[in-house]
Length: 281
Image 1 (cartoon, rainbow, N blue to C red):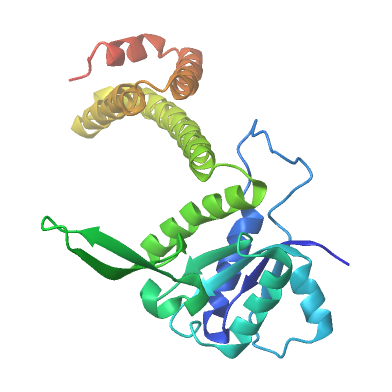
Image 2 (spheres, rainbow, N blue to C red):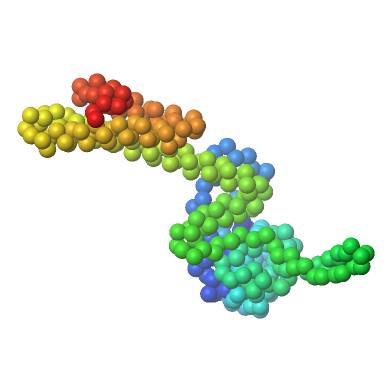
């Protein structure tokens, strides 16, 4: 029997959300140097259960062969008999600890199955020593994929993907999210460094063209000034954007040195020195 890491369970109306979550998990790559409690475990083997078909023995075996069950919750989920049957099936063999609630629409009270919501009677002693009781509703901690805009939905999907992967792997979600954030920042630094190097190289080409045509009129002079301005802004703003990030600064410094070498080949190295001193104004 094939073993699945996560069975993603949803109603037909939430199938698109289920598949977006599964695809996000399958494409997510762990940051380097993450020590897994169990190196054999994964989070990418996904079983989708979104068709609301009767639960036969073959499908029951697949659900039971899943280590975790992620339930996509919306108002259509709460009292759906097919969903509740599958939840019971999974809980019989795995208990509640393997269930991950994922809210896709609506408020928790109208979207979670009744079994997810714990009601607790709390007693309070008043100053006059009388005792009053009231019932508190305790909702499970859930992944939240709700978002008003498409951009916001993509942001929360990326965030919850990391947290769900961490839970499945037995890692602390916040630790993995911090590592993931550092990796995104590093990738952004590399991308900016590359863009910076390209800008410097382009500025060098325009500088040379401008120098060649300097005597041909005001347009060439303005082009040269603009090119120096581009180079100057790149050299100043790119390191400032990542001040304090040693790894990013190393990449940016390397990119600037590579650009300098390219300008030296064009006999424009002294112009870059002028740019760094704030010249060209």
